[in-house]
Length: 479
Ligand code: FAD
Image (tube, rainbow, N blue to C red; front, top):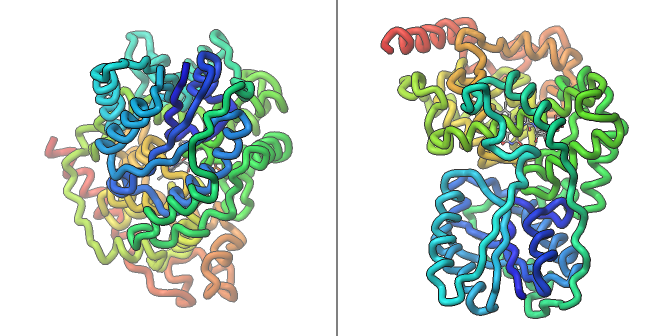
């Protein structure tokens, strides 16, 4: 029997149900990953995540080849062409069964349904198996007393922990090496070249080299997880909100492309600190963040309209945002005159990653102070983040804009100066990303315009706060 494993955002050999099952049930296994530049552009996938994926694929190719599995990287512009491309492989390599892990975004779900239909029309009608791997508890399994999905995080997380205790969990080991090597495909060097040709267009500026700070070989990824779980997770609760401390795990890029699973994170945390329901405050708070990740994914599956540019809460779908594109450009460039907002945006632009506290601050600033449609910010984030993930990003943006599940009420508007004093009191983070403020006295550093030491603020926070409240209030009254 010959199996095909179709890799997507599950780029790992450990704890990979599709790969494990394919190896278990088949004598020979081949693997594919399909690069889809047009589709990726449509989804605003960032250059840095593409480059990171490319580097991870090179490592994955050699990890798979140790198992006697060849990974073939194919190019197909969009999801329609992906189908033709994978079907072509199935037919020409005489595949008996296709294995993949499930994706939950609307376009991906439609693609997979279409694939199944087409596969059934082929003369050989190979079997098709799909598995749950993105969440520790699959979407759809956490429901309230009326069998409906949760719209609020706290009861979701309580139920999540209860279910975890009942069902238990384990990570899948690396599959055993197969006896037969499917020795038909390109070498790692050819793969790199192939990739380069199709993605070196101007459409993907700055892709090359930006992601080099992020490890891609499995032992390095696991070392990062182990070090965090052993040495940093105890202090997570006290330190996680201070961007200058850099004390969060920075595992999000791996969770986004699946070079690490959430289950692996949970397993390592528990290995160090005990059962999920007995954890001390630090590790427990970190687990809570993993549960937020699950929550937003479950929400996306239950309410797929969030994938289609719609507010979770339909009441907020029609807000008339003033949308000043000049203000938006300043926000993107990190030139608003609000030091912490600008430092955060420059962190994003320079590194492809932004600290969670700062994501909340800049998202609130865009939607409430600049009164710009949160979808503009959501898209900009996707196009810049190394860890861009539709459900987490959409959930975070809708939370900040008060249009989503469990959202901050619209009258709760972050004050950038207060946030700055509270979470970057010494100004270490601001000075790291805004060198022109290196000599600015700390007493002035948090103020808009840094008391004349910095570019003038593009808006007045107090004024915009009132305007924003009026916008939301009017909208409410019209409903
Ligand atoms: P840690 O603090 O170490 O947390 C561990 C893991 O838990 C993270 O890697 C992530 O997978 C998950 N996680 C943590 N916080 C959240 C959260 N609030 N929501 C969902 N999952 C969470 N996260 C993304 O992975 N991709 C995104 O595109 C994304 N966009 C965001 C946009 C906005 C406006 C906001 C407010 C948050 C967004 N987040 C996103 C969530 C969060 O900011 C990042 O997951 C986190 O900063 C990643 O850093 P870390 O790995 O060090 O996290």
